[in-house]
Length: 70
Image 1 (cartoon, helix red, strand yellow):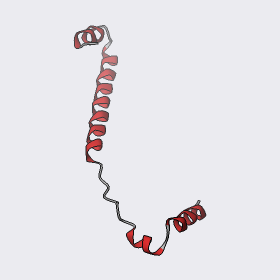
Image 2 (image 1 turned 180 degrees about the horizontal axis):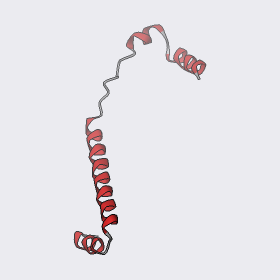
Image 3 (image 1 turned 90 degrees about the horizontal axis):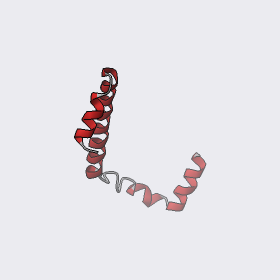
């Protein structure tokens, strides 16, 4: 579908539906701007945050503790 086809369809729509189309376009643009930004900016800033705990507990100890919390 191209812009010309979309314009022809929009010309047939009543004004109240056109405002919904504009809202939906804005929603899609925002949705994909957010997705594209998050894909490129994800960081492992939390990595190594539990280093001190690893000296005290093994991964098995932590699994058992997590089971108790559930």
